[in-house]
Amino acid sequence: MTTIFSITAPIYFLIAVGFAAVRWGMLTKADTGRLGKFVICFALPALLFRTLSQRSFTKIFHVGYLAAYGGGRYWCSSRPFSSAACGKIMCCMGP
Figure 1 (cartoon, one colour):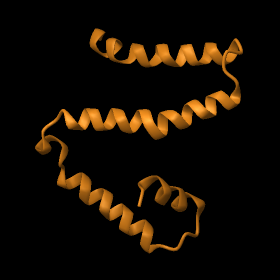
Figure 2: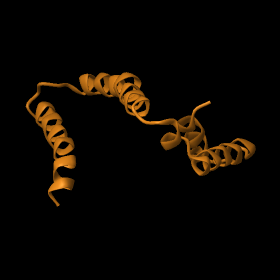
Figure 3: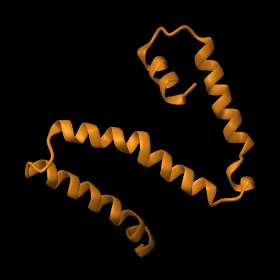
């Protein structure tokens, strides 16, 4: 139980700090948009790169995952975009 708490506590702490910063007017709505864009465009890719670079290739490379990703990508790209959800899926899956 303490292991789970020690892993998740910093996440909840950051959420609480962000909530308090907006609540007390330290950040505006525009600031949160810019901060979110920074996290998505820079911080998260850097975190993924650092995490993946510290692992061996055999732990990262999973044929089942790549097959599922490729199959889903092919299935969505071969269907007409009749729904907005499929278009959003294609946007999230990358080129």
